[in-house]
Image 1 (tube, rainbow, N blue to C red):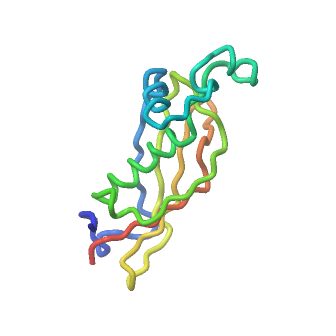
Image 2 (image 1 turned 90 degrees about the vertical axis):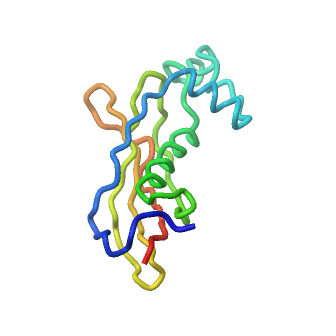
Image 3 (image 1 turned 180 degrees about the vertical axis):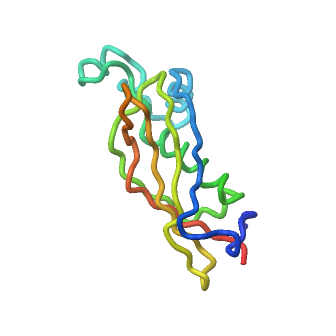
Length: 143
């Protein structure tokens, strides 16, 4: 299915998002159980500290899932998302707010697809971190 966004209404440089989400221990735990990834780095503070982290960390795919939600909401339908690829660059901790966003890089009028540069940021001690950067999404648009 093609989402509600029309090719004629999209321009290179258009921004998507921002879509913020507070990361909670409960959300990390729910993701662990839903995904089956019960790695103790995501569940046990002592194990996370032994690995060099101040506390448990969110799953990279949890963060990517939030980015996918941002792209799908922009497109108007999750089925319009043709591809999403990212680089995981930094951990995310409970209590932090991740912000998904992106920008339209280009349009293909033949295939009715938009290529987006996408990312997830987090404000950490006054500095913007990038748990996900150099991401790319391809979205099919309505003619």
